[in-house]
Amino acid sequence: MKNQRGQVILLLIVIMTVALAIGLSVVQKSLVDVSTASKVEQSSRAFSAAEAGIEKALTGTVNCTDCQYFSDTSSTIKQINTNSIPCVPGTTGCAQEAGVRQVAFEYPPLAKEEVAQVWLADPTATNLPVCTGGTYNICYTQSRLDVYWGNSSIDKAAIELTLVYYDGVKYTSRKWYLDQTTRDPVNGFRQVSCSSTTLISYIYQCKVTLGDNSYAGGFPLPTGLMLIRARLLYNNTSQPFAVQAGVACPAAAGSCTAYSLPPQARMITSTGTSGETQRKIQVFQEYKVAPPYFDYAIFSAGEIKK
Image (cartoon, rainbow, N blue to C red):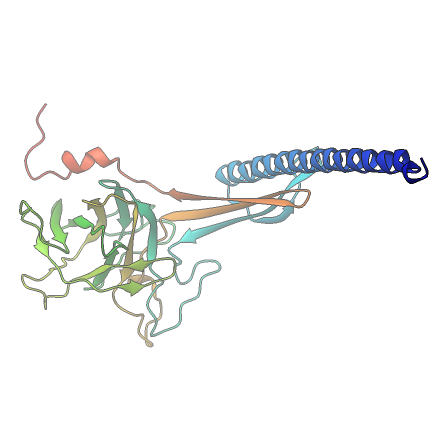
């Protein structure tokens, strides 16, 4: 009997320890659930605030920091930035030194057969053939233009380029079909030699210079340039596309606008916050872009018949 004394107390201690461990586990799980639910709610509020910032920017040009547009102060639009792209010398917030090329106009990655359009003349001009009367009054008049596309050495994209220009009498177009590999069956595209080039946001697999006649057959670039449209082909993944002025602004130039592409899109970035959570949304908005089906009608070689 003496050896059995205290066993009940030990048993109670064991039971209490197990019960305490279970209780702590339940409390910890409850705290985690509450924290997760709170973070999910804050994330949702921050995302909604970021979306509200995008909507605000789409209704007008808005740049602000700590923008409070809500009666509910638990969430706010931390920042809205709207930047015209490409950046053009002489416009607000844009500087370009003599002897330096304009920063490339990089498109968001394109899916297969998705069309990108780049203006070479001011899209706001009231008289496009002579490119006057617009907000910026810019016509790209140089003899070289760099085109970049693709970012995969495995998923190799081909490209269709449609150049629209004014020949002094009428608008006309010129097409190039370029590929970086041999297809089976043969597609009849011009095969180009590619090597990777790094710009601001992407590494590009291929580059051609329109106006450079050192290639077989050359890439003659006419005067009166209006716009260029590009369509990626054969790619299974979305890949980037970019156009860059091929000539640097000379030191003696009074203005660099003739050596620059006009602004034709804007990147809107909105950051929403709620508590300790932040969410960011970016929107790429273009100006005056023809729908993709125009490539099969307006820019076709034959007549359009009803």
